[in-house]
Length: 85
Image (cartoon, rainbow, N blue to C red; front, top):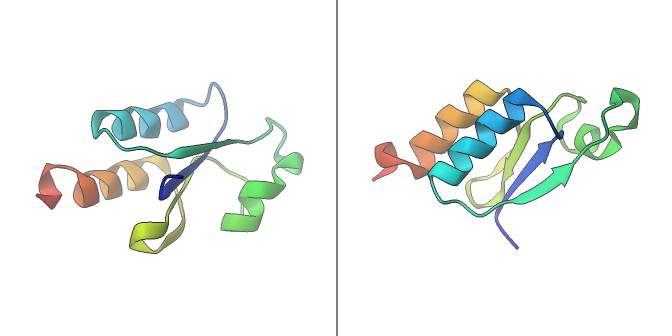
C-alpha cells in the first residue's frame, strides 16, 4: 500500500494534472475514484470535509486532505521533486 492516496474523478482535468505530476515524479499512489455526483461523494467528504476533487492524502508527511490541483502539484514538487533533493 502506498503512503499517498488520491481521490479523483475519471475525466477530471484537475485530477489529470495531479496524476501527471505523480507519474513524472515516479510516485506510487492509491487511487480512490469518486462518483460524478457530488451528493454521492461520501468517501472524499469524510476525508476532506468537501466533495471537490482532486484531494491528496500523504500519510508519510501528515497531509490529511489537500485539495486544489495547483496546491497539490506544488506540494509534490517541493516534497518529492528536485526542490526536495
